Length: 104
Image (cartoon, rainbow, N blue to C red):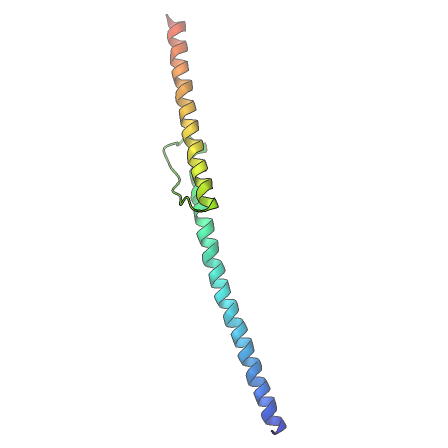
């Protein structure tokens, strides 16, 4: 095989290898982007719900899929919000009782 033909084949295979590597990198980047979106979206929703709860809006529930860690975290946030709502109700009842006792 002539030397120039060998050089052409080497160049061809090199470009094929580089193209394959870049294509694989592009596909892996797209897959990583989708995975990051799937994980970060529920966390963003929980963060917004926690912000609203901190501002006093306790009527919101965080939607969740109980099958993964993020879902369990969302369920915990919802339980915490319900517990906080219950505790506020108890304190309101005690306040009304105290006012009625002190008032007469």
